[in-house]
Length: 128
Image (cartoon, rainbow, N blue to C red):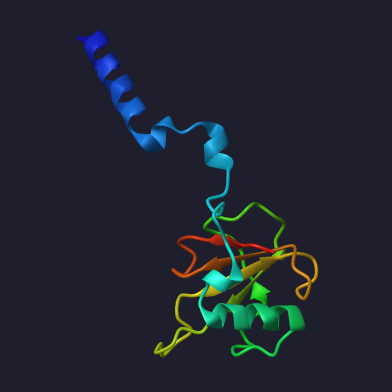
C-alpha cells in the first residue's frame, strides 16, 4: 500500500504543471512577450514619448515613481531600477489599470520598457 501511495503521489506531482516546472523556468521572468508601440493603445504611445521627453505627466505624484516589482514578473534588478507611468484609460474615473514600467539608470533614456493592461498581472516588453 505504501508503494502504491508513493506512485500516486509521484504521478500527481508530474501531472501538475506548477510542480513539473524546472527551476530554470521558475527563475525566468514572465514578461517575455514583446509588443511594438504601434500595437498598443494610442495613449501608451503618448506616455512613452512623454517618458523619453522627461514629462510632463498627467499624474506627477505617481508617474515616475519607483516600481518595486513585488509581483516578480519582470527581471530582477536593484530597487529603484524600475519606474512606473500611468497610461490613461478612456472613461476611467481613476488612474485605471494600464501602465508602462521602464527600467534603467536614467528615466529619460530607459534600457527597457514594459506595458501592462491589467495592473501588473502581466507584462509585455515594448520593442525598441
